[in-house]
Amino acid sequence: MTDRELLNQALIAREAAYAPYSGYRVGAALLSVNGTVYTGCNMENASYSATLCAERAAFSAAIGAGERAFRAIAIAGGKGRKADEKVAPCGVCRQVMAEFVDADFAVIWGNDQVLERHSLEELLPFAFDRKNLED
Ligand SMILES: [Zn+2]
Image (cartoon, rainbow, N blue to C red; front, side):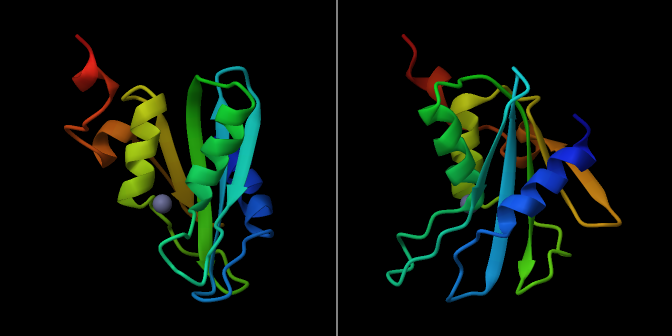
């Protein structure tokens, strides 16, 4: 699966976004090492702090299905009907990714014209993760 194909899956997932407060709609597509794609969209809440990002929704779907090994995630988003912004994951989502992936896991975002690919290590250097808790 190409980065563009994975981003297209994120765009499709974005259609289900529930964002009545910000209007900022995001979709994510998470590729497992087995080639299965798990998707998620953002889900806002009137309490704001209960809002869930698309990236964590995709991880939740994958973990719930028993997946534990991942290659990449693509993220697509923007205000309203447009998905033309380059959306990087928030800090909480970066931390969640660090729980389940290796440093070379790819994080992809972009729009119709541009694609960016970064390693999680670039996005979250010196992460606190499961290795910190090993004996
Ligand atoms: Zn997030």
